[in-house]
Length: 141
Image (cartoon, rainbow, N blue to C red; front, side):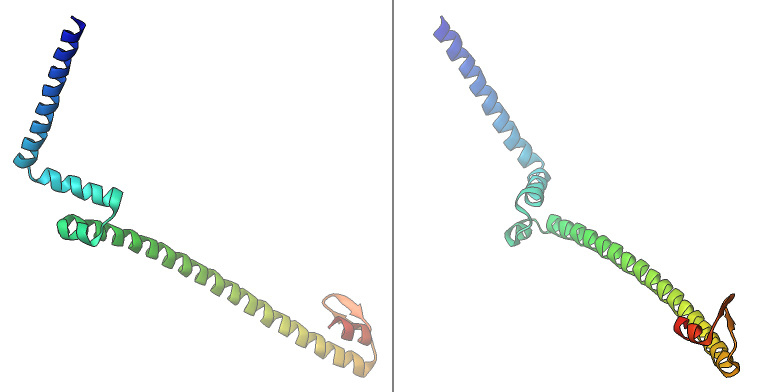
């Protein structure tokens, strides 16, 4: 009895498998786009787009290549924007340093003039709110 029930279950399972395979084959012939899309997905996510895969499904291959190019274009745009931002920061830093340099040059020239006058008169010099002897002012400058 057990052998009979087991063989009957096996036969039913075999028929289910036959019907599933037959249905899948019939469906694939009825809708020819399904195998193409399945192959495209397999090529895109599993094997990658080789030359042979591209020859087999040119449209899907081109779409995948366009998507890759779009992603690369987005990365390039982000890198270009980052470089432009860095260039702007560097230009601002350079401008600030040039302004500081010009200010320091003017202050140095003012100190030089005060030093020369103090040296001639042999008196103390007042520079930036402090009094200096000519030698001390020379060292400070």
